[in-house]
Length: 321
Image 1 (cartoon, rainbow, N blue to C red):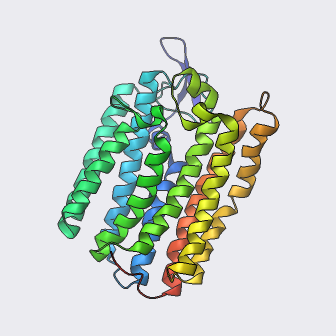
Image 2: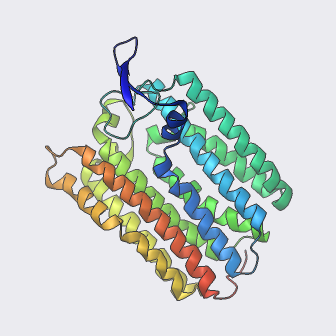
């Protein structure tokens, strides 16, 4: 990778077209889309309702919706002036001049079309509830940063992530295989939603100052560093509580406590998060970039632990709604 200068004098990275699109998808964040599908599929397999093609389609659809959300975020944050040369996080292809804004927008539309086509198959398999869920998920992915009331600009990004990358993704993965809703899968989705929200919390803590300057009113901007640090630990605690309650009250296999391995990479991440309070005026918030990657690994381990633990334990029916 090299650098070049754009017409307005900004420095842009020189990358191949393939590398540019890989950067645009933000591969390190994709665990938030994959982990709920892994967990939901593990619960389905434990209950004897595993269906290979619907599970695969759920994974592809979840990843496509997340990629579309990431592309929308890249495009709209640039258009709204939130992504500037002052940003502290990893490269954004639009802001860095690697891909033109219109190209990123077309990529978002194409990804949504592909997600829609996958959804057609899932609707054929599992019926109209999946149509509603899929269309709302795609709409909310765009409205996360776009539309007249962008969720992330109005302090609702955390709710979006918890619901759609936790509850919805996990429960729907089970549903498209089984044909009914599982209370256990819904509860597992709450744990995954908490873990994925922790990822967003790190992101918002890192970007609190630049987001505030751009008028992006995340919870971190609204309530400050101390609140955001507490929120990070609350998300981790909620994930732990979900696993414990699942075993104690939902007849999950004790092996689902393998999900707590997701906390291991979050320990060094938590130290970096706490470091913001230790030196509130002088900390370089770029130090939170590794914390974001560590928390993303935690999401992957948590989801894999739930799914694998349920499958290996085969604890019996989780029940249906």
